[in-house]
Length: 373
Image 1 (cartoon, rainbow, N blue to C red):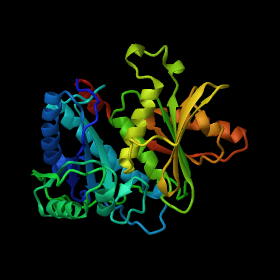
Image 2: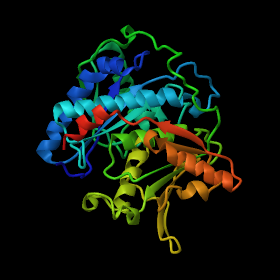
Image 3: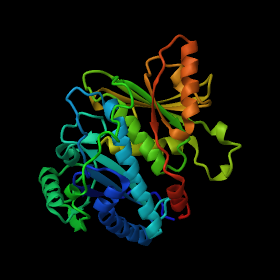
């Protein structure tokens, strides 16, 4: 079991996603690269007994996109892509017997590269990825033309900074899978990219326990960041409701649960990493409500984005106290909670929230991954 002492993360650059982004196509395109990279990092982690982070940056352009499309109009497409990629990671961990529960040998995070960078605050292009705050020292790409071009562009744009002060990068190449161009075309009628209405959301909420942050949590948090409007001219807020310790006292295996402060810090570290921000910087403010005994942490980032991490003691949290929230991201297994929230808002005479649903990894994959410690 690896410790969580921070180390310089690794970066795997993957070329454009297959136009047919089914799980089988993604597996054919990326399985070799992910397998080889995870295996290398896992070996290092087991020797050092320290968890190492792997950021996987995958090039992707949303289909039939227009300049003024709101992020929500591409929710289904992006959720399908990220869900299948995390599923692939999950299966890879199980096949390699890499720790995936509690303290992981490898902490995987997926980043989307979009040349337009129009469809979410957590999307990068090669330039913003190369120049953002992330202390990558090990960078890999696939051994094909697209992979080599992606690595060349990244390396050219990567400048020495406080995050990458060491001279040069440890650069390597990994096996490429099936050429993405040979994997067929997406059937547009099967992928509904506008399952949600084309609204713009400047205040988005999500809630959960977020204990021992796992792949499902990472998908949920990433999709939450992708829903919010990237417009830098208006203030935007992400509200992350994190279940308070008091509600978990009767939960099974309570002795293994992390406390609220640790869970909040893990969520913060993940969110800032996919937003290209520095997690070592102190949050803008911390507060404690003496009446509700709720803790909260406020993070004011550049370009008008604020993240509020709030301790919650019921299924509603800020969604029924903050009228400005306009969207809620939930997992499929908590669908009834989204309806309950909107019922309460309607009772108050407020507008209902637009609810975005994140698929749960299918049971077979969850069980397979959960069997490995």
